[in-house]
Image 1: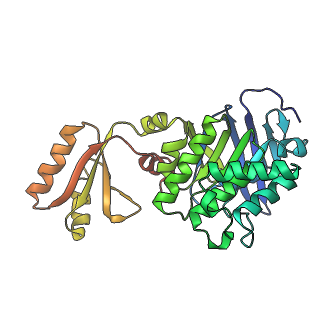
Image 2: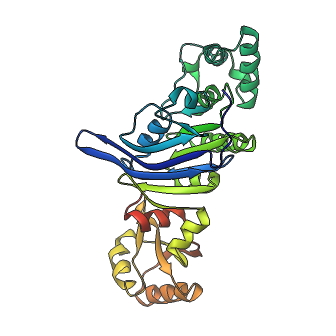
Length: 317
């Protein structure tokens, strides 16, 4: 199958999907250029995985249109499947087989000859740093190793577009960093990647473009810097020496702005908009000193994607 030469390589227009009385997608629009990484962000239940399932022909949308390299995902599903790879939220490899056996199996299912399958398996084991564990059963692998193997299996035949649905969920920081390195390498090979993630720093590190989905709709899109500019200005980030001071601090700083709590709640870091930069930081320090409220730490920074997400959706991931 020779793909149609088009830019953008993925186009989605007014995509809708419902399950019974529940509307999951309410007219999604996406556009992805060849050889780039699109980060798809959104809280649980926003519709991210449903979008991926529609684009990879696992679900039939109820309305709208989506194309991969010019091929319609509904009218031409076999053509689409020949051009894409998918790593879902749960590893699809066989735990009883070894890593090598898994990759040879996937290669043979994709109609590579026996010799070509063995050669491709060896290449992928080296690329994903699994050579030393190649002949161990997958059930003995760590979570990070399984995810790398699952990703390797999805590119046995190098796809034009690779879909990664929350690929690092549950991984430790080291394994996550290793997978990030693999994703960057795949992008450098010219593979277009659509990445859904719960980790905002992951999108910040990998994505060329980001779309934010909430309640089945795209509510924002742009580069990381463009989305940060939507929040505007700078932020003061502070940690309290005594957590019981939180309510006092929130009330004391209300004339400056809303004190935003992140995933750690009152334990911080807490964030507050700093429209006047260093002057705002100084005002905060003086107010807290006058009220005899000690700080463990305070700093001035640009908006993070966490701030963007909170500003757009009213809640954290």
